[in-house]
Length: 591
Image (cartoon, rainbow, N blue to C red; front, side, top):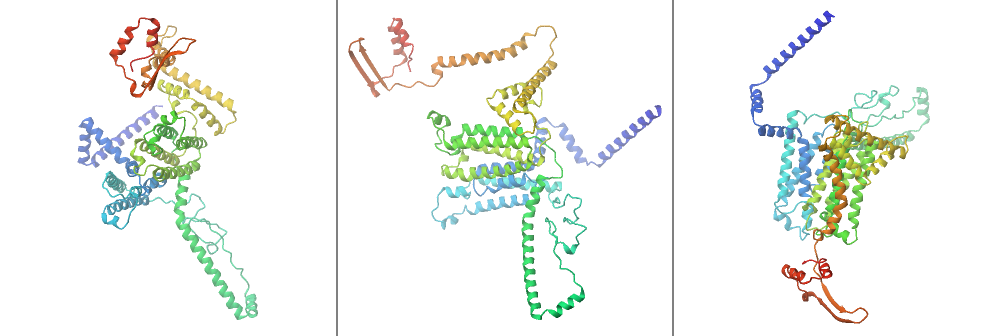
């Protein structure tokens, strides 16, 4: 035991010496400028260090910065000319594994330069002289309107950020780094990327990149004697015809082979792109459903409260106006149903862990959103003003862009093994407890999630048993949160609880119940706080005895009605001493 102890002490001493020597070597390899920079960063104030850290964070995420500028540029422009940029980002760049390729960044930079040049050319007046009379909204819809506005500055800012990201990739050595996508995973694959078989020779196969080798039928080998007999029996004219037919068939086969190779060469990168997405070499599973759901949840309420800002119907009327008129616009209903359907499909794909379905849904959503926002909606709305002049469509597109970026990240990362549970139940704090209780109190939301989890999860339980299991999880989570809170703030056992926690905990519940009971009565009692009083349009006075004809009747409308001021109203109340008259006047006020 002593020898083992001495050996362990010697090993620790050697490790310490090697660590000290490596540290000294690193210090000698560092330049004086690096030491000065570190010393300046350590001894500077908090604002300088925060600014430097923020710059480093932006530089490290320059790719996300480019995506953000593309989204903002599309919101500012909202034209058909800038539409391919977000489509390339959401359907190509975000889905590239492991990172966007050099071809993608060159395509985005080139197209941005084309946009800048096109807008510069169409700002000359001589371009519009030969065009003739065209609607004023058409150049704005295309994106070549003759004006100098904020759009051009955002195009230049986007181009500047793209070149900055290109510089960062070149600095890190990732600009010319290409991944070998064609290399097969199979052990039986040959080095050149084609499948080989020991039973088929090279002469009997046709090697085409990305396709399986197929066997070419070879003519049977005949003996020399048979060949001589056939040559003697055949005529020279028949030989010529056979040679001509053979050449024709060979040309047809050669043309079909060249055409198939051309088609393969064109569509092979697309096939490899999707194969790399669905079957990558490695994945780090992440669960991004919760932020995606919150983006859709926020967009749902943006559609509800900002429907009139999407350029549909009367822009001055709110959705409450339609409800007061007892009618619901068809487009408003379709937008809400589409948003709700997207939430349901998203949950189903999440529960089934279907990456292929998630990819197809992602592509469909990207195409439909951009066609609706930038082509269909401007055509049915007021052509004189863009829907993106209002705030709700901008917010809706920003949250949907965040959703699409998270969706692409989810597709590349894959789903974790265990996905059931609630995002509020990840921790056992008192805040998570109240958030979870608030979530369960939302009408129908908890029940819908329970039923969807049972429908799209492989389980031997029936619906009632699944509901019992969910209720057990709910009770256990709440109990564990309570125990965790009691462990952090212990109370002596066997003694009465302290009054401040009781007032804080029980008083909050008691106050909520009291407010739920009495607030409606208070609101109805204070009539002035609910709406505003309307001036009467017609007034009539009738004097009669019961059982006899009326003695006097008078009516007044319009300008014949006079408003009474506060002084006259007070004098009128003081003239009547009778209790019935005073009670009658209390039902009215001066307004």
